[in-house]
Length: 220
Ligand code: SAM
Image (cartoon, rainbow, N blue to C red):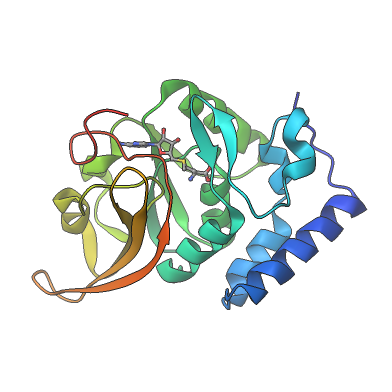
């Protein structure tokens, strides 16, 4: 059963989480405000509800996780979302990151590879009144029919930067993607300056579940 009650206790815990994220180096006021607005405990099953405002990743079923708040904040900050940006998220999972992107004013397109999660999250976010375009399938190849995108965010660990994603990014667009082996990935920010010129920044290490699919890992 989902608890859809946002109490003073939850709000206080959320405030404390935002202060912690600031301490850890998150500066983007819009990102911090979105995290302060969105009840993360809504995305948890009752049994884990009390952990919702810890800065930790948690299981969401099907062997997948809701990302750590710091990771969501860090990726969202790197993405530099502007209101109206057409953003592709790969790895819908619980829908928490998609909801943050929506609160930042983006037109969100989110794709998930696991049917059960896709069905559950699609239903749940519409219940919350959060408008996201959902797709079921292999996001390692992007969504060619919806391209180009202003921004692309990958929330699973990739072995390489998929060429399809760079192709589907607008000139001036940003791709944020963790790239590495199955255990640890470096957070990469790629800025498409022209059709041929890509600027690449490397950030800290993170630990994501694997990006599966044609341009990801071939098995779990
Ligand atoms: N963004 C999510 C959230 O806010 O809860 C967390 C995502 S979880 C760390 C990674 C997700 O990527 C999983 O739900 C997994 O099923 C999904 N995934 C893995 N490979 C994928 C692919 N090729 N296309 C789409 N989704 C994929």
